[in-house]
Length: 402
Image 1 (spheres, helix red, strand yellow):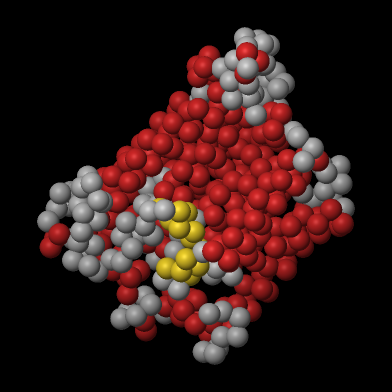
Image 2: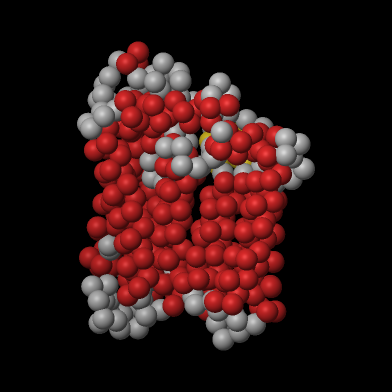
């Protein structure tokens, strides 16, 4: 037991708290704090910090998440990440969670994405994002000298395809797309040959065109009815103003009505579009709309700055790390925050077709919130325990000699 706290490389040391990236931690807490305020304003039935409201749950999740992100770096997890069976274990756990959704999941809004655990709903696909980041970080390093071979690339692509297919079958195409972009970004950062990258892009372009043409045909064979309608509503919103484009058009009006500084978080419900019921999913998918209407352009810019700052911090950690495994973990986490933020804000502002995706750290939803804090905690962990000296930049850390 004493080895847990003592020795040259203790498994746990409170002294490592001095090396935690507090700038990253504070940006996450700041984004979550804005989320608490916006959710409290958007929750019509239980406004503010009502005990039964979503804002209180988000506040509790922020406290728990911040503690997770603070405590994780104090452990030395290098032995776990480098274990010879680690790669297989995290991938198997990913499949197990997604299969469990198929077998034991509950259906909300026509999608089976959650598993009920007592009074809480748990979304396994959020955990799978972390697991795939860890899996591919180890997979890429383990086969780094053979990654350019067609055989290894095919195996890695097949592993990802199985997971993405299980997510898409829930159905949850938006989460599948985010997960796919995270994995692709990690391969790109690892230096995958341009020939393979170009081949994947060349294959994706006609696939996207086929899906668009399929949606425009009026009798889609590959997309579900509502998916095709959302694409059509994005291309021709004036034709779907009373149906599939209704939400997005109201969202843009609401954001524009906020002006420079917004109507205020305490604005009467009758003075806001979300308060009068014109914005559905205002605490989750369209939380950015609430921020735009209540906090105005200033609030929107602040949210973008915080989320971009979180992603940029992860990228900087990745750039200055000597351990390539840790660098890929940090890169994958940064891509996760950046891509998901872009998709959520793009939908709220009409730049992208309507799809359900939460805004990182801000939207209501404990699964997403806690998983993001956990991923950030792992990033800070690998940074602190970067096992080689790095004196090239501000993220230089020496191996602990406590």
